[in-house]
Figure 1 (cartoon, rainbow, N blue to C red):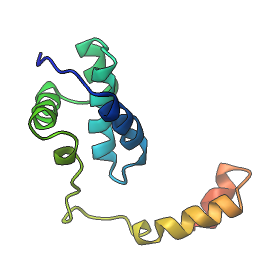
Figure 2 (figure 1 turned 180 degrees about the horizontal axis):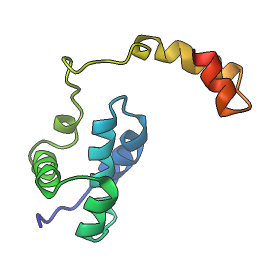
Figure 3 (figure 1 turned 180 degrees about the vertical axis):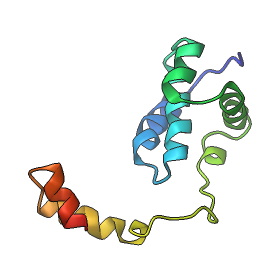
Length: 110
């Protein structure tokens, strides 16, 4: 395993981006590195993150050479969901009018 000392700033950034990045694939990368920074067992880390060893090592090497920035890009050619352009509008509406049930939320989205 590649020995890495994560800075406190990087650990805080990983903690933030593992949930806040708009691309779920980047969230998985950040989660894997965050868990690595917490010294979890290697096989548990891969199992919980659903990552292959090759993917994790590629991300780890990218982090070592360039920090967090090389792990954040989103592929612009990746197909987007039809509602993605309206994400901020949907979030604002749901925060202002929280649904009581999952069914109600689905009906409002539809």
